[in-house]
Length: 410
Image (cartoon, rainbow, N blue to C red; front, side, top):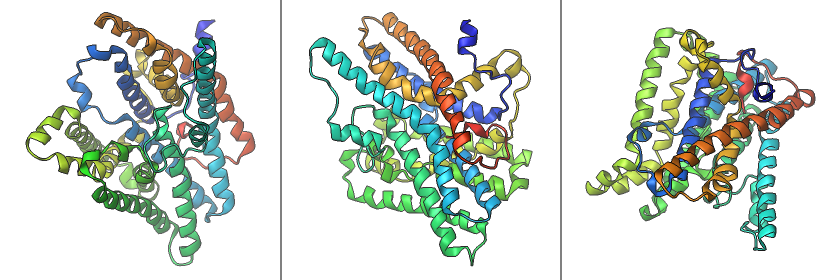
């Protein structure tokens, strides 16, 4: 009975294994970072943590690749970019992301109110205006996200990227369709978002004092509208240059170059070497780099991974024999639910309330955290996220696809 309860039929799902692996790696990195909260002062850090890529940035690039491919194929199939295509695109994206998000957000609010009522204390929620901003995805539109449900900064960036990039593409089609090819219009739209956002970051980075640091730039919608565009650029190359995309030798070169740049970017921006930057008088330059060039560097480096991972269609050998592939696909499927549940609903609301009296107790909390995340995310995906996502098939037009596995799009 329990096996049926938690089974997602991953063995029969037709998917691209390499893309599932990227999504699984991304969410495991994110959840691993949040798991260390349970150790409190007993966490002494791990050097290998500083070599890991940014899981959220990997999510951005992967989502951009998947939804970018959908946009390009829809545009080319219809040979126009009209209001119907735009609304159908948004309908399908929002059926995928909004119901799960609103369920968890509302649940957190109700639980906080219930806990305050049970204890006879005032609730710790922010004001009604701030809560309303979360429902409209403007909690971090022009300033850093409040402490309440802070992990949603990245989802807000994705949602606004899903709005802005198609709008730019629509506008460019309206203006240039009689003069440019669709291929040129697509590239122009992608570069407009990338270059425009980078120029905005550069200008604002010059105006904001170095003393204010760089973290806010990572989590503000206005400074990160290019976040998914590096993945969209990869989708552009795949669609319009298929021979190069499918060249095995090029794929391997791009993979190793992407891995090297990703690890280098992760390490050089890690807190483990901040002291060296400070000692050498480079901290202002480092802060400026993290506000500006770091984002296109990490985005492009991860985009270089896409051709190889996209070509890894099925798991073979030990991946399939020992059940590793099944586990990876399972984690990929529940990754969005894991993202929504792991930090505020599970870690901060439940696990972190258990006192960390020793290192051993801290590791018990870490284990409990992982168990709760995997179980609750599986249940949320199976009994809510998946049925609601399937509902969109009856309420929207199916988008053209070239790849099995692209049903994992956001």
